[in-house]
Amino acid sequence: MGALGILAFALAIAASIALHEAGHMFTARAFGMRVRRYFIGFGPTVWSTTKGHTEYGLAALPFGGFCDIAGMTAMDPLTPEEEPHAMVNKPAWQRIAVLAGGIVMNLLIGVVITYFVAVLSGIPNPDADFTPRVGKTVCVADQVDTDTLGECSGAGPAGEAGVQVGDTLVALDGQEMEQFGQLRDAVAKQPGETVRLEVLRGGETVTLDVPVAEVERIDPATGERVTQGAVGIVSADAVKQYGPAEAVPATFRFTGQMLRATVDGIASFPAKIPGVVASIFGAERDIEGPVSVIGASRTGGELVEQNMWSAFWMMLASLNFFLALFNLVPLPPLDGGHIAVVLYEKIRDALRRLRGLGPGAPANYEKLMPLTYAMAALLLGVGVLVMAADVVNPVRIFG
Image (cartoon, rainbow, N blue to C red; front, side, top):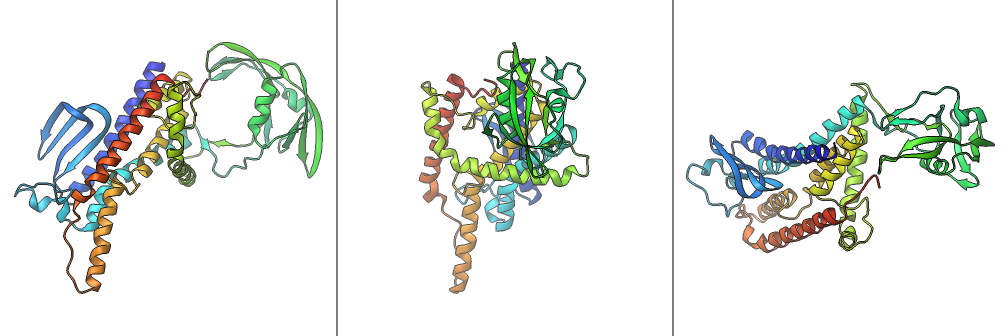
């Protein structure tokens, strides 16, 4: 199952890249531009076919893709037949729309995935109160498999000790609690013992002695059965499944949260590269650090192995949000760099009009080539480092 999961996520990444490039292609065609080539991958051609004016193909290195549009820059040689369809001769707003087509496609993929996960299994509730509050008390049972607990009855240890729905967890054995996970992690280490739980109820602090039951759980890292503690407290509505209509606003609110987190991740990306390099030589790998296609596919395989399909799809949604926002960075050869050049031309021409001058010539991309090559080399170098780390010291989400 792990190998199939790795293959499934790798194919999902390839599909995301293909749709990103398709976003450029469809938008270009809508504005009458000539698309010469549409390829997934780089390097030597593995397979190709030509339909109309476009060659479609697969290349040997599946680490991206490209959509070759006639006249993307003034440096691009054109045939007489291509002149009327050249991108460089189209209005600026059309050129920006084409350059943004892939970005918009990745955003759409992420939103659509999030919507279906919200309807079919649930997403983190964007309106949830994340204070450690009791959602319900339940009986506790041994784990049968990765998805199923055994049958049980009764209120469970916490319910029988007096814990009530709506109680806010304050402290466990004198240690203040800020997140619900602190309770789960602490009691898991204390099977058969009794813990002192302080809760806030109706403005007053109530202290309760709660016996910790011994239960069998399956270690996700090894698949072995281990004995842990449990008290039978479920958090309040952190994940919520939505109906088709109410999932729409919830999807957009949660997408906003994911995009903000993605921006923070991109901003912190350079600071995490030294940690990636250190991990190649044996240092502990940061689970929140950058991963390559290799690492992402491996993580996807782990999620499938644990039958965590919702997390699998949400990771793919997160990857598409990353691709969209990273491509907005205004540096060549990224889409954002090309958009920045078009905006520069518009601002320059506006200033020239104020001085009574006509529009200037298209931007000279030859002057940008050193920066383009430098950025391409930097991205390639970082990519090689991250791939090396993913091979010798991969991120392991289950230990």
